[in-house]
Amino acid sequence: MCMGRGGSGKTSFVALMTKFFIEKGATPLLLVDVDPDQNLGEAVGIDLKREGKSTISELLMETFLKGGGTTVGVPPSERIESKIWEKGLFEGEFFDLVAIGTKFIEGCYCLPDAALKKALEGLTKTYKYILIDSPAGLEHLNRRIASQVNDIFDIIDPSSKSFSHVERAHRVAKEVGIDFENFYVISGYRVPEELETEVKKRIELPYLGKISFDKNVERFVLDGKSLLELPSTSPAYLSVKKLLAAGGY
Image (cartoon, rainbow, N blue to C red):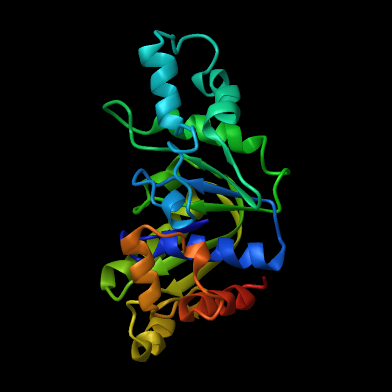
């Protein structure tokens, strides 16, 4: 699971992790986009609408608002589980992708989150790795969409708020009962190399290193191109490979 403040580079990191596992042959993968901005699909070259797939929020709207369904009786998360497999899950050669989507009604993300959590319970044994791109902030941790994860990667930016975010995220993850093995901290590309020593001093959690700046990543993101198409010599990709190796991959 990858998390961090907005703009820290979470989605790019997940996309480059995907590239790493594909090249390593560690597939099939499941990519889970929990961020309402829905950037992960574009980062790996998948347009769900073009593929004829819907987000979980769209499926809930279709089932319980447009379709006139009721949320009384059988839990909504169970009622739409089959629809998620049929209409919400993009299935590719190396990875599948599911997205929670933009909130469909006023209020919290309770129903979409519950539906996604229920769906993931039946998926964990199907894939080699499940990569989760989380939204900014910490609220999603309280809903425990994934209650058992191997590794949490928190991407930081060069700000005091980012350091505070790491401390709070680690504490909240433990307090809400998320079962994780490792909580790793990674510097985003905007953290100057000369500040890495400061990062290590201020963070009391395992620090893996820094994602390298790569102008091609910026260009690919600007043009809406898949980061999976980056050359294997990309500085950003090479740094992510090094970070993952430091984490035991």
